[in-house]
Image 1 (cartoon, rainbow, N blue to C red):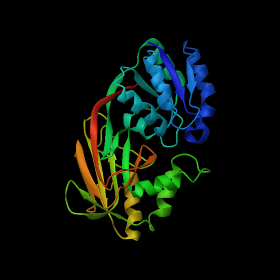
Image 2 (cartoon, rainbow, N blue to C red):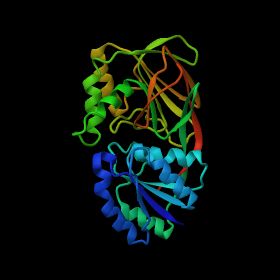
Image 3 (spheres, one colour):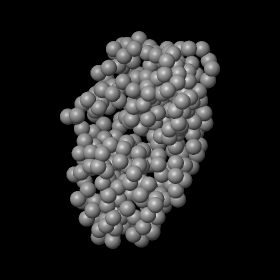
Image 4 (cartoon, one colour):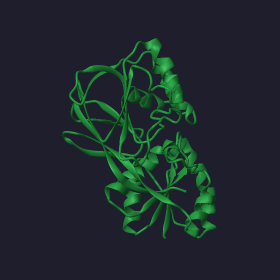
Amino acid sequence: MSVRILYNPASGRGRGARRIAGIRQAFARCGFTDVRATTRAGDEARLVREAITDGIGTIVVCGGDGTWSNCAVPLAEAGSPARMALLAAGTGNDFAKNLGLDPRDPAHLAERLADGAVRERRVDMGAVAAAGTPERLFLNVLGFGYDVAVTQASQRHRAIKGPAVYVLTALQGIVTYRGFPVAIDGGPMQEHLLTVFSNGAYFGGAFHIAPPAAIDDGLLDAILVRDLPPLARVPLLARAALGRHLTDARVTHRRTAAIRLTFAAPPWFEADGELVEAADATVTVGIRPGALRVVDA
């Protein structure tokens, strides 16, 4: 089966560019020499479309959660039979954790692809839509509220490496952030700190946000955190890092195939690390079961 490697030099704050020489060498030893790089933000979609047109069977994506998502979305939207394999060069690499993979060894992956010994599985993708805008798929996580504020702040901390950037920015703003009103499935407006819709168990590089979640169960795990006094937020955040927050009375956990949110105004949301402003105050979130083929080992 044909193999093409796509990589984002900017992923992981330059880790993608630093890793590619070793990846090239490992794959070349197995006869795989087709390597393409992104040249600008959002370039993954073009590279994926080219790979589909060229009949590539396995697209190896070297990057982090943002790069993996930017490749997975056009692949799923196209309904392509091509499968995606992961090599980690990002900050949190949460999607790989959700798959139970350790995608740091290019030689192992190249050898498995060469001898045809890899397994694959179909995984779900989430979807978010609002009136006036097309449906948007996401691979790992969708968040409203405090998640958006943390994503905005983390993008300003260029000197901090790895998952620590998300933890640091989460702690910096947790006391001063103001909650937001949202109604869930037509219920009453209530003040919330955070609403996260997770396809898998991990997000933010360090948070075990949805411990029961599975990436291929046909459901999203909704974590709805009502607003609480500023000084009470820090202990809850610490519990979320350990996956022990779901028993808190202010946290609602729902496993669902669809949910409707109504905000006081069109909200900003974070989808796999990308910030987007909805065009309408009512937003629907759902699941697309088995939308993507991925290499599992």
